[in-house]
Image 1 (spheres, rainbow, N blue to C red):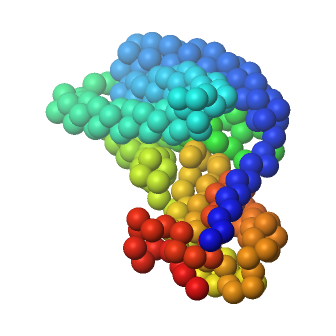
Image 2: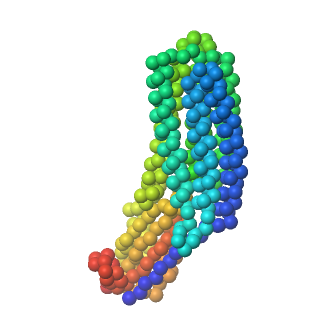
Image 3: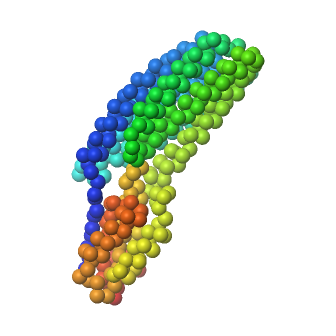
Length: 313
């Protein structure tokens, strides 16, 4: 009977903390900009009577909350592992992203409600206030997107969620500007309500991808870009592997993928387990970008308490 376990952890902790620090500065700049935009749009919306502008302010408020929570999520997720939390707090990032996306849904539903109320009781909209404030909102969101999206490298789920907030808010600002122009030339104030509905739909739709990804990670599903059957066949194709079982593939956060399995070695491969596992790890990294593995090699009926799970020769 022979067993061997291998854990492959080849990530750079220093670069990870540098990434957190860089994102922290970006979050701080963007938070400040969005606080200014939120206050300006809300006051402008109240004075001008524009629901679309107030809706955009509500979306910007969600941006502020998203970014504050996002920064917190990045900092907490970067904390080192402990005896109690052996993975660290990396999944905290996913929790925050889920809260952000869920907040978007609630804001979208609230805008729907307000738009229906405004449809029942129409209000005249002041173009001269609505247009310049909407332009300020658009400029602020474009600058925020530049700061948050600037720089290469893969973005975390949390940063992607915050960036998505800003992207759709920029689109909603464009819609508000278009509504202001239409109101100026046609005096059709109902356009303000239509744009509010448009913003609400956009807000809710933008949250679904993040919600779905968060659920998948929490439920330990296989990452969407990895086919578990393909992984199984590639491992089975490694010379010296007779069969395998107990294959598990999951994510701890939006970036890091983990894999564990038991491989049954073919006859005559008893002394080659280290080499076989190294080749499996190399293949998993090259083909699927999987860096974290726990592979147990077996010759005999190693898992006696799991009848049928292990191999025997």
